[in-house]
Amino acid sequence: MAKKTAVDYRAKTEDELEAQLVELRKEQFNLRFQVANGQLENTARFRQVRRDIARTKLIISEKSRAVA
Image (cartoon, rainbow, N blue to C red):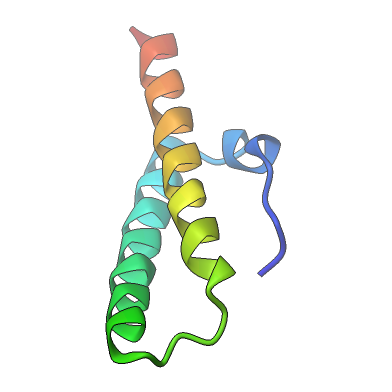
């Protein structure tokens, strides 16, 4: 997966961001199981997903504040 920037996230609608957040949380859940079982090969992916979740939540909150 290519590195995404905040510009890529801001181009999406709020519904798309919510759907992406759900997918990222599912991936984070699966990565946690892989860590627990010792099967995780790319350990940097765990950190990247965590940061993508934070970035997505930030953009969602920015968009909701802009509407209000």
